[in-house]
Image (tube, rainbow, N blue to C red):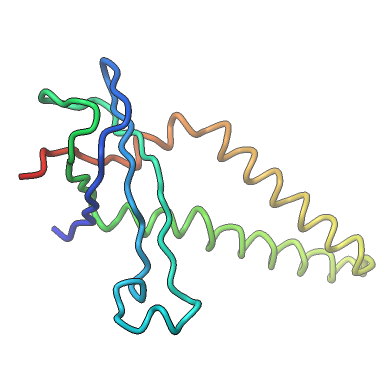
Length: 137
């Protein structure tokens, strides 16, 4: 099974979850020529890991692991489905001979509704995006 792994630091603990801060590094950020290029970037993210097992402490270095399918699902929900919604909405409004301004407004409204639904289903989505936590040796 292919895995996605990130090193991180525990910044908060509760009974059933931990908040882990990771540094997300783009591939070019490791390049020796990055000082000459404005493309590279490093972002800090905080990830909630539910139902942790083992004893952890705040400030402890850990390894977060997840299946590569998690990344593919994230791309599907964040980019592919919204693109399909935009294309479908614009196609539908074109077939109905609506003005371009109204077509754009309806496409944006459809995206707002889609992202609102995702927000409302965020607790269910947590079950689809499962990461495991292990101590960094």
